Amino acid sequence: MDQPGFDHHIHIPGTTIFDGTQAMKGYALNKMCYSFNSKDNRDAFKADEEGYMAKFGLNEEQKNAVRSRNVLAMIDAGGNIYYLAKLAGIFGLSVQDVGGLQTGKTTEEFKEYLASQA
Image (cartoon, rainbow, N blue to C red):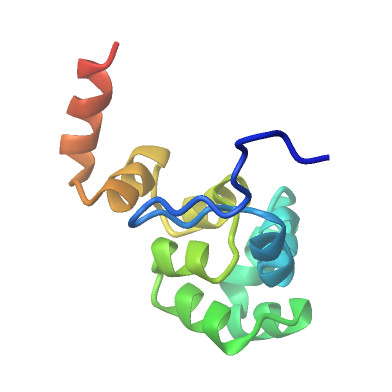
């Protein structure tokens, strides 16, 4: 049920809203990332990234984002940051690294920003 004044299509410049459309778009990518809860699956991905992406049915946009290690492109391709965190970890990126990417800051700038908000 809709709430009065609630806009289902909020536009925030520079922000990809993870909604039902994005969830459907990113289903394969998010399912793959969820599989990384298992160390065996993380190891299988590292051993054969292309085969692993094919196993989960990623489309070319998603594959290219993963190949280029571009977290923002993964989000645009339907990735949910909570699932992408596992993939970012495989790439050696911390949550602060990803936060910096999302905000256009270096990791150090992002850490300083977080500390200033405490």
